[in-house]
Length: 399
Ligand code: CTP
Picture 1 (spheres, rainbow, N blue to C red):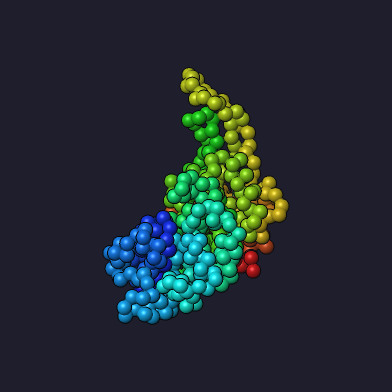
Picture 2 (tube, rainbow, N blue to C red):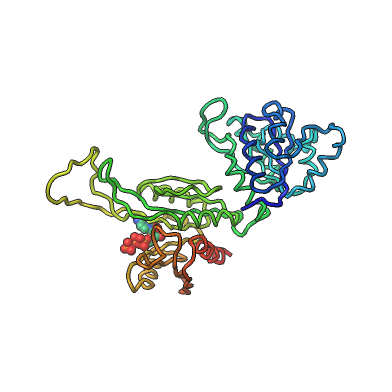
């Protein structure tokens, strides 16, 4: 989405993640937003105001006491469509939660009633501290939205706990969604697990059994569900596609790995959409070293991989959607059989042999079949539009 015509105030508090706020200011400006940057005194120690002025083409505010700008915080609290706080340090979150207004940024936040998106960034122990947890809870109850923090290297070294600020693109995706949905969205509060792509089963370290699934349908579903306000957990096999912004990705290789990931994630999910094309067979034995080429034929013994949908444990998500990839005339009957066998709410039928449908293309022609029997036959559409239609059906089933 474009930020054209949108007015954004970017509050920057003092943490090393300030360097990412420069990219954020730049991207917002390039996307058409009018960006007013407000720095705390410690943020100005990390990045000089002149840097943000050059990036946004606008004056930067740092103090309540600047001449002629006495009420700047009131204007900046009211006018912008969105306030982004990035980085949001433990200190600024604490001051905002307390309702303090001891500098320009906190005064602005206190005067603001419109949407605020905060990207926490701090030492992992500070993020885990009960004081910070309580402050985040207080601010969330007041309508603040949060993005991150993520697990990753911190200024003080590697960490396996959250603390690192989300990347600018992730913050932008969350900001764009907040502007569109106003913090709501038809799937707000819902967790959606989407699977995508093929899986790979190794014959030996350099040879695999797989299929040509591109992952496009699943990725389109993940992006569309995120845009509708959902928390999206994407379980993806190997694909070349860039991850949709805002979704949490779990990368897997084999069908058994995909099964484990799905089973763990669906426990807290409202919806599961199995758009992946998991390999149905794997070699009965996988060689630890490369199998040498020999003259003559090679016979492989294959064993079935687990059927992820058919073996889904209870409790299951409220709505479960499967796909049926068929290659022959009686596709509807086969799809209905899968719907029944795998206890699905919907099955999305597509014909791999039809031009413009199936693997490796940007379009799809599908029929959505519900468990009540109703079938919606769709024309040839982009996978993004197919994703929207599938989510429309999911939403109707959730209500
Ligand atoms: N699926 C699954 N686990 C597998 C294989 C497929 O959960 N090991 C899911 C797919 O993600 C899809 C649905 O089951 O949502 C149907 O997949 P499809 O390949 O059409 O059918 P299969 O069940 O594999 O049966 P067949 O290959 O005989 O058509």
